[in-house]
Amino acid sequence: MLYGQGMVRLIPLPDRDGRPGDARLWINPDHITSVAPIVTRGGDQNGVVFTLALDLKLEGLPMQRAWLATCHTADETDREWQQFLDLVTGPVVP
Image (tube, rainbow, N blue to C red; front, side):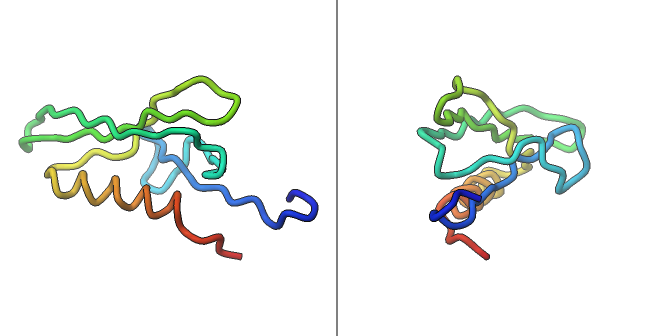
């Protein structure tokens, strides 16, 4: 906690190699200086696969690429991106 400034808010970046819900990294959304979605399209035995990653720049750190989700439709990919944006811009929950 920062004195006189309230609680620090942290949001998770998922762990691609972990269990669903595991976080690889927790970030303070106030420290994001830029973020852009990167979508790659591939395939597997079940059909088309979209991989959603982020080019993420945090204050004081170099640009990094972080995995966000693997999806099977473009609509699902859009929903995952919107959920991330909602999390970043959402209110602080005590």
